[in-house]
Amino acid sequence: MGKGRVLFIFGGTGDLARRKIYPVLQRIMKRGKLKDVKAIYALSRAGFERGYLDTLDPDLAKLIRFQPFDVTNREDYRTLEKEISNFPGDELIFYLALPPHLFGTTIVHTGSVLRHFLNPRKIVIEKPFGFDLESARKLNFQLRRYFTEREIYRIDHFLGKVSIQNILSFRFSNYIFEGIWNKNFVDNVQISALETVGLEGRSSYYDRVGALRDMIQNHLLQILCFLAMEPPAVMDPERIRDEKVKVLSSVRKIKPEEVDRYAVRGSYRGYEEDLGRPSSTETYACVKVFIDNFRWEGVPFYLRTGKRLKEKKTQAVITFKEIPGNFGKLIGCMPERNRIAFEIAPGNRVILSFQMMPPTGFLSCPLESRMEVSLEDTFGGEVPDAYETLIEDILDGDQTLFIREDESEIAWEIVQPILDRWSEGRPPLYEPGTWGPKEAEEFIRRDGREWVLV
Image (cartoon, rainbow, N blue to C red):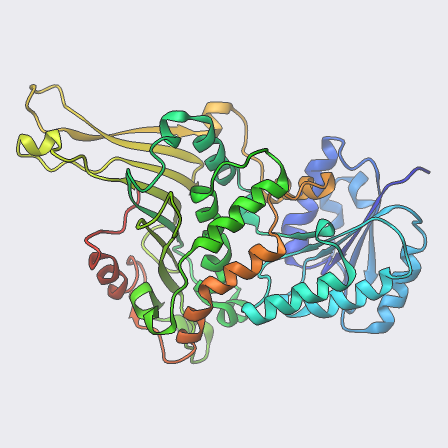
């Protein structure tokens, strides 16, 4: 049999594997892209739920081999070593679908096993990558001992979303927009990831992490990179990641004494009851950052996220400056600003908001008009699942949408002063079903602005 691939999924019977990884592999298989996969090892302490494998395509199910496995038990890695020896020369893909506190142990033990083999290999690591700057650096150090950067795939599943990837295409393929994508025309940028739900069974994880770590440090900073980066000289994974790192490196560092000017937190009333114990974890966070480079100097980027809010929506909204001597003002009107919004959830849309005169007379006040482009309606068919895109890229060896070592650490550097400040005290409360704490409203109003969704 020719050279192929073998997947080893640590946590292979867990929620992520069952809910995302196997269904995605099934869809990829139907397109003929798993023909060279010889086996899929589900490494886990517990077996599959009864009947789960029967829900999968038989061709996929027959590839899956359950292996009792405890990632903290060195003896189990001897079993892993024996299994690997059955696949000389085949590519080995190790997917860490595990709680984050087990990443380091698994990396070290797996890396030690691989020293005995010359197989090509890849390692896939779920978020969150680290708990803070220090732990992220430690994880990167452990990875460097056993893997090259070309073999490491740090997943941020937001980057698998077509609506986020479309930001680059929209900017760099349309001269009419790229020409105004700078400080001369843009007043502010807001990136919001708002949820109406609470803990939803994630209480033990979420209470250790909080809103800032869970969403802003990774997902929202990644969206910021796509909105703010310069066009790469060539469409190459490393050149694209270089430009993202340049953006993050240009984000103005927040001094410890400035945190309260740049960040606000909150916790919804009833969070401790949902959790079942006292907690100082924030369920809402908003941060203002500045990118000190030629394109964006002086333009505030506002990032906010929270649970149990009024509406579920993930959007990036670019608000443009008011035109001096605006026509509407000349006739006594106060028109809205022009805006472009990239909606990531619940839809996959690009929305343009602009002013038009209604057909009631030449001097009528302009009214807001909208143009919406839905990716599904425009191009037909369903938008691929984020994990589908990312797992295909892993198989293809394309690292464009994965986080590089320097990128992961710089993102932690940005939020670390906020984490340090918030390690003390308790967040203010806000009522479920609102837009968050009143402190967040006051925070942006001090800049003469409002929170915006289009």
